Amino acid sequence: MKVVAVFALCVTLFCQGYSNSLDSCQGRCGYGTNNNFSCQCNPRCESYRDCCSDYAELCKDGASSCAGRCNENYNSQNKCHCNSKCSQYNNCCSDYTDLCNSGAMSCKGRCNENYNSQNKCHCNSKCSQYNNCCSDYTDLCNSDGGGGSAVITDAEIKAISETLYALDSNKASASELIINPQALVSNSQTNSKIDHSSMPFFSYLDKEALFSKPTYTAFLALLDNYHWMTGQTEDFSSQQLAEQDTFLKETMSNTELGRELFTFFHTKGVYASEEEFIQDLKMMWFGLYSRYNNKMDSSGFEHIFAGEIKGGKVSGFHNWIQFYLLEKRGLLNYYSHNFNWPWTTYPDVLGMQFMWDGYYKEVGSMIIGCSPEFDLAVYSLCYITRPGKQCRLSLGGQELIIQTYTWQKTFYGDGKKFIATGFPVVP
Image (cartoon, rainbow, N blue to C red; front, top):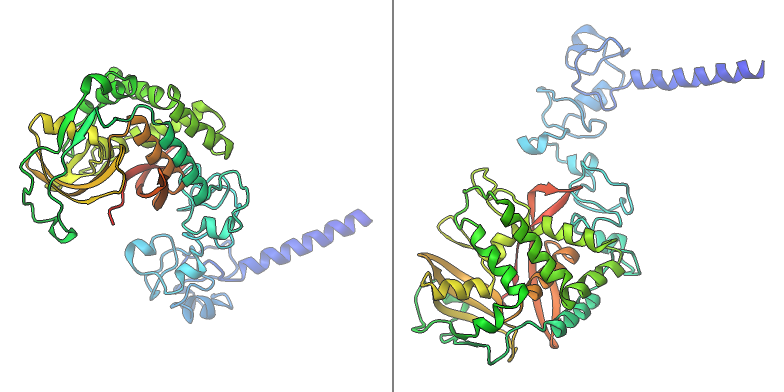
């Protein structure tokens, strides 16, 4: 008898709850007539006199609000809308974000949530690893700065960047590289397209000493694998794909600098193994996406290290070795610089103006004289720890700010974002 009584009570409560859901317009405004419901929530219900009791409150009187209407079907009679398409059609109710899309771009109330592929950004311990944290993740979820597996402080970034700086044994020495910056212009003059420098930027480079090193050789092999113009599909041969693997192996696995960077991330819980680290670098740097005309025409590596032409001007192009090679071939004409950082040895950092094959770069900032592994390491460090933000490094006691941006239109892996660009910030 007790079992029967409990069962009867459960059925009663279930039916009561189910009946309540059938007798309400909560979340149903605009739906078509459905005979599975005891009342309806669309404009026709007024004619057929079968509206739910809260129809006027939720669907009619509340037609200018999303209260009780989140994710409803489209209803042309409503003054504004509360579904996932309303942002696209610019017809959301004024409280849509607060009521229906609350926290979509914020970690408020979402810290340590489970991964949801529908979310635009994330708020769990893995989001730093996947470069898809919401902008306020650190402030709201790790505001104490205390020891989360992927929480990396500004002080730690400066410390590891100093270590990488000291480990750059393959950088150019003063006897191997001589530059001639010549004209210094103001920021207001960078768009003048006037050649203020009569001589090349590079006066001397000991190619035999530098370019024979494995990391330089691996880097040079990549530069002729790309079309400069966006809108042309990049189609890599098996050899070119192997060159990408060789570059990552030589720079990150076979140098003390690269191994130190992995150890740092491994210690912080960002990567469980070197294999995972290298594979992620390959995808974030060499994974293709479309900048123009729906062609798979670009990657982070191509944009930053090789440079691209888009919209009649130079896009990206923040590598000194590519600059040197093109200048030596007569394809690049150095005009001036608008900033020279305080370093007196290499690597140095300048913001430069130049013409590349008839296309102008108003400010191309780059780290001069560093090894390929150092260039890759500092950009990777900043992108992984501060994606889409300014990243403050310390090199020889001097601050360098790197700005990175994430590619927002396509993804790789489990929602991870490609590198869109990165460059030293010119004051």
